[in-house]
Length: 72
Image 1 (cartoon, one colour):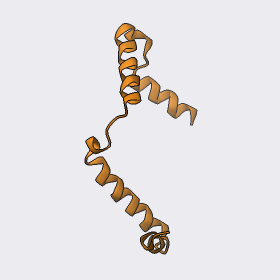
Image 2 (cartoon, one colour; image 1 turned 90 degrees about the vertical axis):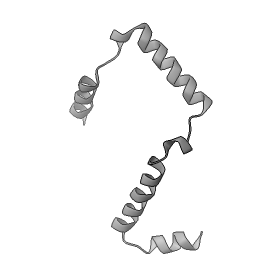
Image 3 (cartoon, rainbow, N blue to C red; image 1 turned 90 degrees about the horizontal axis):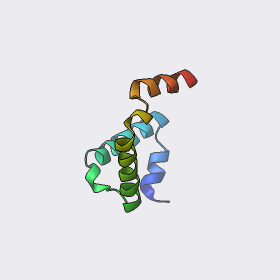
Image 4 (tube, helix red, strand yellow; image 1 turned 120 degrees about the vertical axis):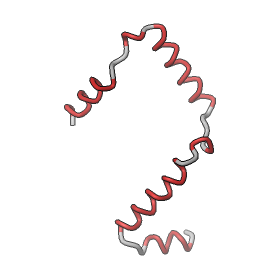
């Protein structure tokens, strides 16, 4: 295990969580660096085609969100 990881393990959990959040923010600032795999692109295209073919089959976000929160 690297020395940096050993040092991080000595920090309080709250500080480690903050470091993870800060690190994630640096990744989220440049999503193009991650890219999509060909499989992801294919799946997104398939879903877009399905939506365009039958738009009424989808569920509006506000309805889906209510269902999700009701199930929690």
